[in-house]
Image (cartoon, rainbow, N blue to C red; front, side, top):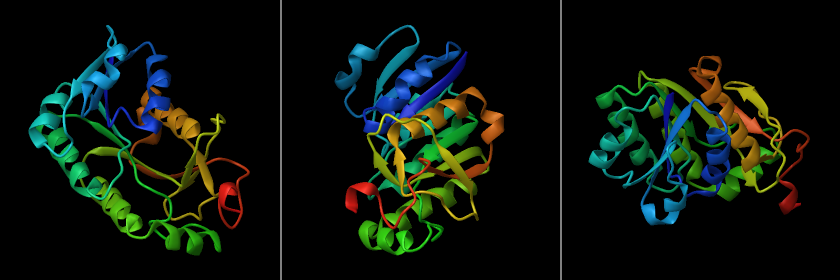
Length: 213
């Protein structure tokens, strides 16, 4: 069995990830969130619900102990510090592979005029997400950094990938497609090891996401 922990398990993207991971019969999943009561119905022989705070290194270290793959889909102004806590906890207990969502645009890799539009809209979020990517890449752990852009609730789960250093494609990322990619990484970690990937939904090119046109 692969022991996998999902940090921030009650988030919108995480809720797309959970069923896709549980569909993999070799995955034993731990759901880490602030209030376990929100997800007690998920408790099963292959899914454990653990209450804790990602700002608390002790909580994280206890939860990550025994895990092979750690997934974080969190956001927020304190994301860089929480990510550093996760990395410290992983090193302390020997967890191997960190999958983390950052954001497209942190390298000014979005095509114009979308890049300028995005930069005006997101403000300081780019700097925060850049720190997350940089912390992860220099951690010495196996990692996969994911850089989605404007998240949608589209049911389309097809994704398009670009490597770090390449111009991003598209203006949107469906949560379903991001979740499918996470599940694909868990299924075949070596294929995506130590990669920093732009993640978008195909055929969404433009100067901004469709909802803002």
